[in-house]
Image (cartoon, rainbow, N blue to C red; front, top):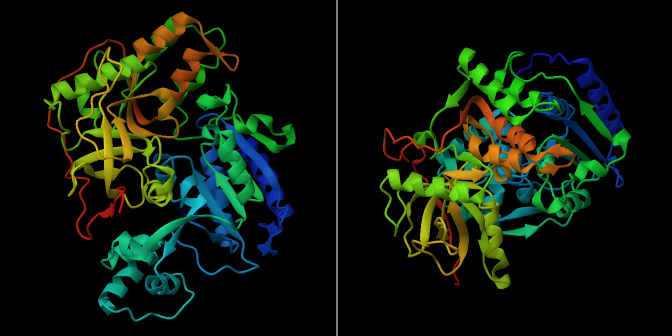
Length: 509
């Protein structure tokens, strides 16, 4: 983040004033820097909505900066110090690790919704270090930790404001200082939720219980959650509580990717017209590529976006085939997607351990190799703040025209994974990659079927979501072909030096 003043457009300024007034009603006066004790009722729920590039993230970052400058404490989900009755707090949330990491890269300390719903329980000995780092206690003397180790922790915290990261810098593993996780019982104060179009009703109700003042940032042109019947949680808010942004502000004014995304709003635009527009754009701007084949080298870290499950499965098997992956094992560097946690109810604590470390449904993961026990995997969770874990895993490789997936190996219970070289556009929501490949033949099928969702042709919603996942470069793949890899799968860039990765065992003690 910089200290340079932000210039707001007319619609952004109007939204800024409305949110400022909302916060004033909750006892936070940003104009005068005045903080009153939190009120139980809060200011309720409001939504700031707009299409990609309208400036939602810019405003979220501006409010974060202003609230922090006013003395509001930022709650990260990693550690919370002693509660004070007059303390004002802000938590910035996203539905997925990847969405949270996109905000963190922009200087906004975001965490996942799950990390706010469930809070860590620290070992009392190491909690003294956390209190000291947070400015609420004296420098502790801890048996087994040198003064140099504490200095490393303090230096890390000064630049990153992460308690777990600081303790890791001191040479500790998460299993040393976090003894478990508990469901949050006490409400917080102010919550900002990015990518709110992904929320379902249950998550929304949970958030309203925790945050008396809740501000949702969402894109109404996204795909609604599968179980939401085409609606988003902010659709039901009163009109006065929905602040709409219309102008495009993100990146440069001539951004061809955003131009294509916004062109989809034209009701007269047909699929063949849009493809012609993509092809013409690709001729004059290398940020858009008219692709004759899927680039397999990109699939390890940036999955191909498809509509149909059958297409996803075929591309995954083609990816494994060209890399020479054996049927009975994974290669280091293969991408996975967490499909949930398979644990009996009696192992609720183990479930929380896994989910709190980033293994939530939809999490993108890179396989680093087998763990120390049969069925365990060493994994890198993309976007997680502490990304490397070792967990009991059940890996499912789906096969074309076969009902049951092939399972190369599995623990008796633990985190379940599907292959991640290709994902559906629905599952890609909330994520962004530098380069995105969109498999256009799938969208052509959706266009021919004539399906409509929330009053708009489904292919347009799919195309909009897929295109706006691209940060810098869009490849519109028009043929069912796969390029050969130019290099083997790699993991060296993901490995980290000591301390050792946290081990999360999900098996019966």
